[in-house]
Length: 338
Length: 106
Image 1: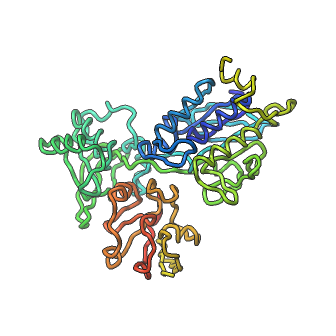
Image 2: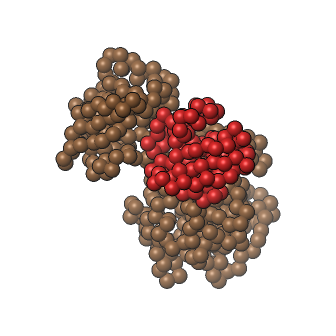
């Protein structure tokens, strides 16, 4: 069981700056995020898109913003738990007991939810019977590519993941690549490579087709794909891979007894506390009258929620407001030599 | 104000007035029409405001940008007449537009 003054859920810009604020006032914190990297939507949805409304930064990309926030956290030692999703939040006396899907447990008086629009999950196939084969014959990510050796693999999607895996697996497997239109949105070099492999019959390409149905008993046996003009093809296949990008799901947060309105959590505007004492929500996931879904609002909300955490983390101490320009103790925490 | 009709997957029909300059997505969200999630808030990053547009209207709409077609790859059951409603700006020309909502968005 990890004890910490505050646990932050979400490693996007708001979560990162909130961590900075907590450490600045002398509180410990750890961060959990379901993605495999730091940065949240900035990294997952728009790493290359310029942002023009961060105060004092005329222009920066999602990736640059994330890297700057990570740099700003350098003086502090903050533990990140990536690839983990918080599943359970339970009250345990004065503290919250938090458990992730990997079994990591935390005990903390303060939980700050900086979860954006929820956690990122792979988009799945539409036919219901696909569920039955999930993680056996149907995958949305690849952990061990050796299982596909010598087998027939049908890959769906038009982005880089679909192209890269079609190219890679065509070395040792029979590959069908299926996409709903003629254009691919992946890197041009990958599209060219894929087209070469189609010419040499290493990849069977089906465009303007989508998955219609899957069949098999224990394991997948064959699939039907349907053309835009309703023509149906039957393909024998051992495995199906779907690469349709990620969607955002509120996920387990919905079960923690919080006031939720249209996928956002209601908070007050003094502490950004939810209806549960010691649980705060900041950034895109919180809502209050006048809420703006801007990164800068997330920074403000995080700064105030961090101050609110102080009272529950150190009930016998009084919080004193200090400036970074003048406070000795803050400079010590930052490791600044005078 | 232009009238936009949203037909839910189950057939329930909502006809509402949407001010010029708003998107078809915003018209739905502001009027609490179920079936349009719009998770990303209109930044064309999520494909959860996906709608189908009947042919006679589809051809009258401004053409899709590349980014919209890329996002539609990820939508639930995309078809030839799929659009992202956050990219459809309401104007007098769209008065009477009918959009059909998919069974679900994710």
